[in-house]
Length: 119
Length: 107
Image 1 (cartoon, chains in turn green, purple):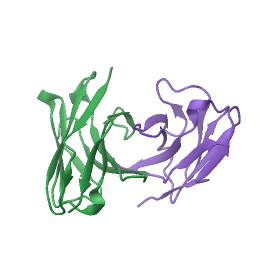
Image 2: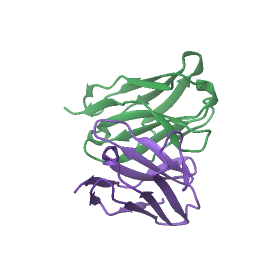
Image 3: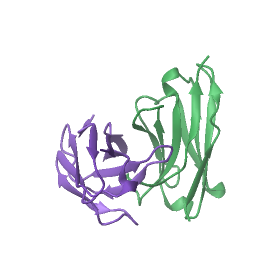
Image 4: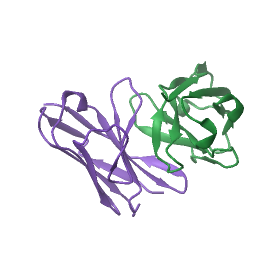
């Protein structure tokens, strides 16, 4: 059974930093690209970032480019999101999601970790 | 940037009725469109990918159609568990943008 478990979400002040983690199991982690997708409270879904299976390619939404860094450790079956210079508008539930065969579709999702940016 | 719009914003129907949800793209996305279902307090679930392919384990009452700029998700006969929010998503150049969602609620 595929499982994705996010962690690391907390309340942080504007301008602060945070690292989210996603522990993957139930599939061959290093065969698949992975994504972060976020959802602000009561709002819709926003794609945040993508990393290729080997970590060699990364992509970001314009809203986070230059502030967030996606990475992975295939030896630990883990995905990460380093978030710097956080803003109030980054407040959201952050999901990690597995890519379906490098298609850009998300076939498995975690339950999310909540990041709140507030003073 | 490709923008997706969904209509209607809310669809009020009874169990057993047919639901027809629309997604329109600001420019052609070919068949690169997916649909997700999200229930309160849950993560989204992939229903349809590449416009018309059902994801693993998705019941046959869910179907997708369309290409280019106009797409439709049809639920042939609503079950109680189908009342949820539905999002369409397109992928281009490795980024994926979502529509604002259609809420299907019980009439």
